[in-house]
Image (cartoon, rainbow, N blue to C red):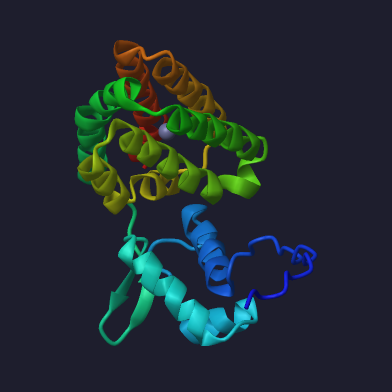
Amino acid sequence: MKPAPEAPRPPAPRLMPRPSLGDEVYELLLAEVIANRMAPGDRLSVDGLARQFGVSQTPIRAALIRLEAEGLVVKKHNSGYSVADQLSATRFRDTYDFRLLVEPATAAAAARHATPAQIEALRTATLRMGKLSSDTKANYSRFAVADAEFHGQIAEAAGNEIVRESLHRLYTHMHLFRLRYHATVAVDAVNEHDAIVAAIAARDARGAETAMRAHIEASRRRMEPCFNET
Ligand SMILES: [Zn+2]
């Protein structure tokens, strides 16, 4: 027997996806660390943070574990969590050397292999970063995360999973942005990203390589003064 046709149902009300409490707490803590409002060596008490943010200890612990994996906080036996040290000068130099070895060639490969959908996604990412850069102070850590995602998307468009994973595991952008709050960082980076995306969209491999190298070298120049100021 055939089931009776169902009356068309009204569409279910849709909720906008909301970040979970854990994500919100993580973002708040990340912003504090990247903006250096929580300084290297500062103790992070689970209990204290739970009271400060008005939440239970569970999301605080989850956020701290995530930040520990990203190298932004450290957990010491018996003394709990504290904010990790800044990048050393050696690690800073090695980070940029690694990026200069890998990312220009990756951008060239992206120009050859990116699908139209990937190019569109890169355009969307740069537009979003442009919006974030209009209020750098409020969005500083979000900008750092978006920058990391942008570089990951290029590795993905290049079809190189190893590069994407390596960049992700270094959490490079979070560590670099933490070195100094610099209002022009974001605006300059957005313009440089536009040049990279334009070359990828034009299937100009050499142009993409050059634009990526210029971006990384400019980024190094922007961040370098942190090591000469003290
Ligand atoms: Zn960038």
